[in-house]
View (cartoon, rainbow, N blue to C red):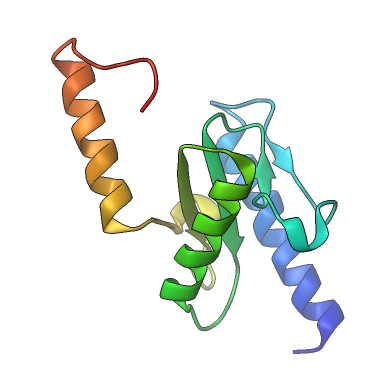
Length: 122
């Protein structure tokens, strides 16, 4: 796949990711390439999150999760994740991937909130 086709594929994935977020986060939008090497994620308007969007034939999950974590740190966000588009499916039927460490922190936080003991931030 050439550079233009690859960029187009990535753009389509990001547009679909915004469509997924918009009902709950109407301010969600593509970051685009405005930050260059200082990437803060692909979608902005999702409080506390750095989201990396991938629309690729072969997923390199370890690399994608590590990149999302780097973007989280840069953005000063609490959480990071990768939204991965599955071939032939809309992003709403894709997968949301994060490190096990983060997933456990989120699970614990949800449990605390269900018990009425959650803090405002972690």
